Image (cartoon, rainbow, N blue to C red; front, side):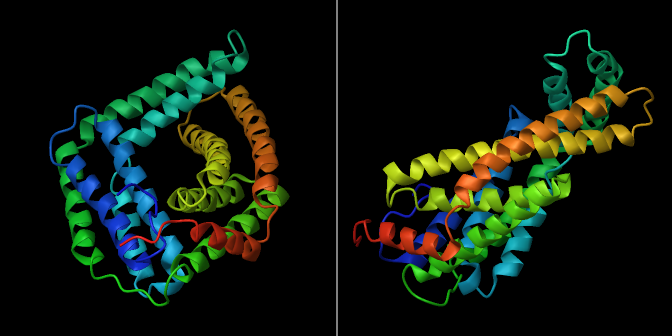
Length: 294
């Protein structure tokens, strides 16, 4: 099945099936040496995020949530390294793309050389086959447990309480991010935005004409918060690099982060306008639009 609930019956069975599909597809992606390792890592991380989003949706009714969430998180963390280093090169390139001749673009030449050298070193040091083999082993352990997952409650409440809980955290983090406007606060908000986006996707077939626009809005927010986070990591990486005379890059990072934050706050206010309890009630109404199922 796709990453969405199909019927209003058999909720527990559907949760297990959705989770199992993400696990199985992730393991399958590691079966052969990848033509593009970065693309494979990106795909595997997306599977991990979808799986953690599914887990958050059942958290209030799933005793094993903490253990399973940690297992998926640890597998995702195992994939770091080369891909993250390449993202730093891409982030720097995007930052100075329209700044030809400016101080930041001039300073970016040396910074880029350093970042590319870092990618090359990490690539040389990495063992792609071992990385994927270990990831597959970790996910195989998860796969062995999915069909035995047990949940309390019945029907929509099994997922509705987690939907509301996550959205409540989304609203809380949005308010904190707008108040503080720090990289840390926006990154915490981004995590909840990702989870809420996955929940909208999981429920997308209940009322597609209404929920698809919300899903696109959450995706836009996630992209802007993701770019903001990448810039924060870029600044931290350059600060630790020992490079001199790169202050103009830091000025450009700060300006771009402010621009992204202001745009994100506008989106966030729209998404968080509804009270969490009201959102759960509205989505419960959509749930009953699904077919009965066998």
